[in-house]
Length: 179
Image (cartoon, rainbow, N blue to C red; front, side, top):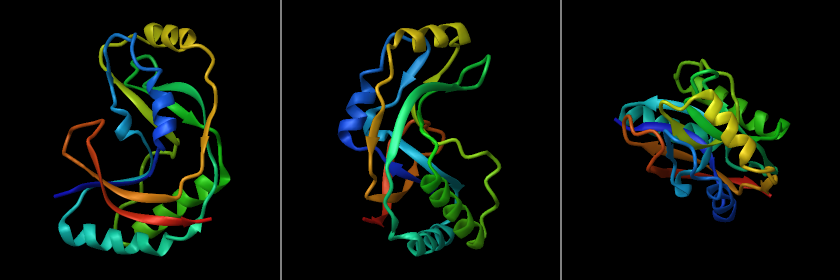
């Protein structure tokens, strides 16, 4: 059974700039820059027929309009027990529309609604036994975050291996965004 999700790829030059933030945080398992992405919709483990239906359904969204993405800050998920360090995406109405379209199409394909609020980000590290104080210190010492911008040319259907957070992720199918 493949584990699927949709997302936007991060260009190599943006990935390289993000990778310079790596190191110096105990308990961090740094994600390989080749696996950086912005998740649009987590799908989960599905059978082959459902995977085919998902791929066909997403085809209806190809040629959605391109739009700029801007990464603006570092943040964490997990509050007092941080579990992930990420680069946050500046709010974007176009990105929210694309994500909502994914949600609608995938629900029509029979998938249950996504239970989590959409918080666009690029995961940089998974954290284990890292204190909130250590993370706050790391973010403060990471220096000023110079915004990073790019315009994605496509969105993709990714697959991942079961219970291996952080990759490797494989592009199963890609869908162009119109210029």
